[in-house]
Amino acid sequence: MFDPMRFVKHPAIVQIRGNLEREEEMIKVIERHGEEFEVERVREGLNIYFSDVNVARRVVSKLNRIFNANVKMSTKYAGLRGGKVRVLFVYRLKID
Image (cartoon, rainbow, N blue to C red; front, side, top):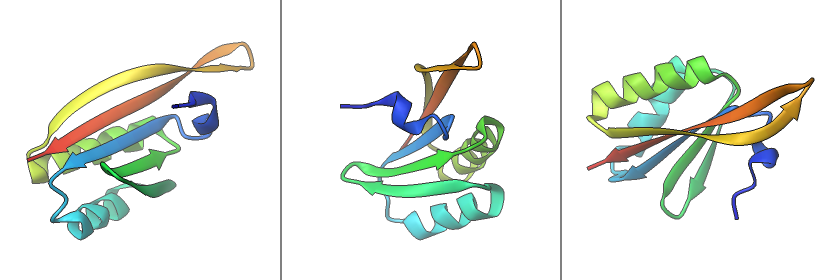
């Protein structure tokens, strides 16, 4: 079961699903345009956890432009910090 509180230090997750034949090229793009991220290989593809939402958006834009992906975005409640609501941004890229 997904526990958003586990990822509070990462306010954005980019999920890459579908055809991962060019996985090494994708990771190079992420390394070139991203900062402070972690890559996790899951059965369905890749999960990349970013510490900055704006960096995640920039990486999603670059990956979408290069790999012509289908992008969907959602948010999840991730708790309170200092009286402010924390939101987890989840971007899903489906590559055909």
